[in-house]
Image (cartoon, rainbow, N blue to C red):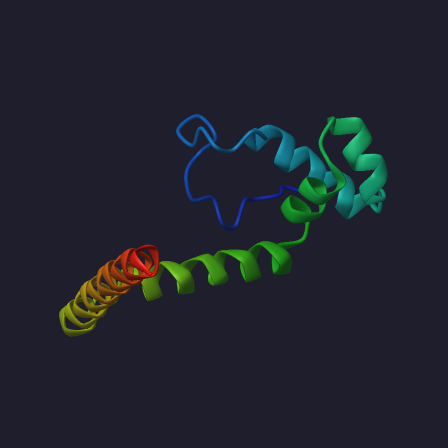
Length: 115
């Protein structure tokens, strides 16, 4: 059996409560995939979904997802202080515009009731 290492462990399964598949299962699934066992068979043997088996056995798919999550995280919470201020200012502006619109809508509804 080949020694299979986890390339992208963010947190071990003991600390990450959202992750339901243990590190041992992941290693076993990868070993089975290296042997050429189909994803359907791996999913049945390890009692996981086919998509979970696909995600944990194929590195490129997991890398794509992690990159996507990192991009979204950086977009929402940029490290650059100037960008962060701009985002905060934009969100405040949006909130004010929404409040003004709600006030206008309410005033218009009152005017319609009077007629």
